[in-house]
Length: 315
Ligand SMILES: *[C@@H]1O[C@H](CO)[C@@H](O)[C@H](O)[C@H]1NC(C)=O
Ligand SMILES: *[C@@H]1O[C@H](CO)[C@@H](O)[C@H](O)[C@H]1NC(C)=O
Ligand SMILES: *[C@@H]1O[C@H](CO)[C@@H](O)[C@H](O)[C@H]1NC(C)=O
Ligand SMILES: *[C@@H]1O[C@H](CO)[C@@H](O)[C@H](O)[C@H]1NC(C)=O
Ligand SMILES: *[C@@H]1O[C@H](CO)[C@@H](O)[C@H](O)[C@H]1NC(C)=O
Ligand SMILES: *[C@@H]1O[C@H](CO)[C@@H](O)[C@H](O)[C@H]1NC(C)=O
Ligand SMILES: *[C@@H]1O[C@H](CO)[C@@H](O)[C@H](O)[C@H]1NC(C)=O
Image (cartoon, rainbow, N blue to C red; front, side, top):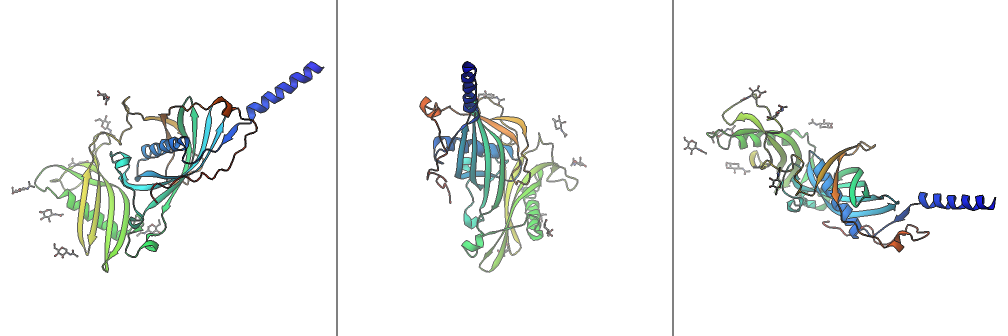
């Protein structure tokens, strides 16, 4: 009887040890938090097919649940919209974030990551993007966002692309079509309304000498680009960059690129997000060996240290 009783006690203790995971809350500027932020930043930019790339602005919260096999990170991030379209092959480091005067857009993201075998993977996320405090509050005459169906701004965009397609009227090169309007803004400058449009373009099967029935080229063949256009009192100016075809459009497959795209079918339950879910990226992270004493620290409670949110990178 006594033996059985003791055995039972051991089993119960063993079960408790398994069930109660350790929860830690490292500082938001700790290497763990920043490694996870970097993984999420790469993930969100690799995964989206429309809109602009986002840059990490601040880590708001981190909780790590440690179980024998995995570490589950629950985090909250603030990111800021950059001026690079997601199809733009420029690395994020070369993509300036929009200032408040340029009508900044912020994304608040709740993110779950799982670290197992030293690899940190995004397993779920939910983001909401919204204009940073209305630019009009900050300065009179700053740009403010227009809805993406604004008729006048869209007409201006169409006219600007016609001008771009007409730039070399006697050379037979491809015509481009609007792929996606990314941003429309308006600004009052010395009493005059200026409209601005930013849009991605896709190559069509027409040349500049063809007139109608232009269809976007097959995704694998088309080149893409990005235009910024503006108009003052009806005078339209446009500046388009055609991307060199290789990166960004297709996920990198070369072993020299440390970014591996894996479709994990992870549709998050909440679908009201403005940044869409689905794919996960695996990025090898050098595993930090926690000292054994730390891992078995008994009765550890989440400690609310004054180390979150972390530092603000931009504003
Ligand atoms: C733009 O979209 C909004 C909401 O979808 C709609 O209420 C509005 O009428 C649209 N405006 C134009 C000019 O189409
Ligand atoms: C195209 O360019 C020619 C020569 O510069 C100009 O005469 C014509 O009006 C332009 N067409 C459009 C649609 O901009
Ligand atoms: C277009 O053709 C005209 C006449 O043939 C020539 O003078 C002009 O330089 C050409 N323009 C371009 C951009 O090639
Ligand atoms: C482009 O493709 C469309 C649709 O397939 C076709 O109707 C049109 O004739 C093509 N245009 C040219 C210039 O090849
Ligand atoms: C796109 O082009 C590739 C290669 O030329 C071809 O295999 C594929 O069927 C095309 N897809 C479409 C939708 O036309
Ligand atoms: C529009 O362009 C015309 C011709 O280039 C120029 O005379 C006029 O000053 C421009 N208007 C504005 C508001 O820039
Ligand atoms: C992969 O990278 C190596 C070395 O940089 C290069 O030689 C090879 O052509 C690349 N392969 C592809 C498919 O891009």
